[in-house]
Length: 132
Image 1 (cartoon, rainbow, N blue to C red):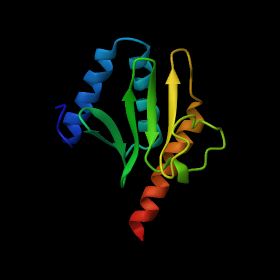
Image 2 (image 1 turned 90 degrees about the horizontal axis):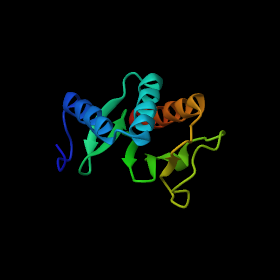
Image 3 (image 1 turned 90 degrees about the vertical axis):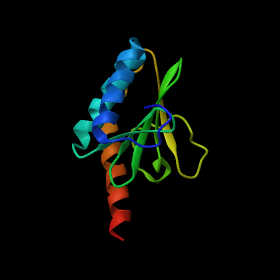
Image 4 (image 1 turned 180 degrees about the vertical axis):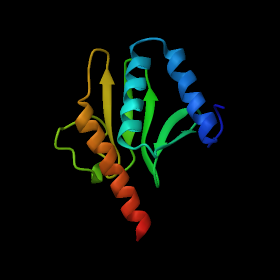
């Protein structure tokens, strides 16, 4: 599936399952945890795979991506600059006009409630724009 721009939901979910399993270290654990929190926050989330294998979670538009690097997992919110972040989770890509990201390194945890609130805010922003 890598190399395809978009995939069916079932194939994307399976690809993400396989991707997490292949990581087989702390990165897989973190990505699996964050994926679970995304699904808990928004049971209607759509899983996709874009940009040569990057997991993407969408609801009326992209909510966030889950990129895997050697030293960290990066969760990039497409419209993060427009989202409230009272817990200060965003710690990367802060200079842009649209995106914001959360970099998670080995041993770090992200507050589940604050992260779910970001997901819900991203859904609300996407669905509000779709209604106009």
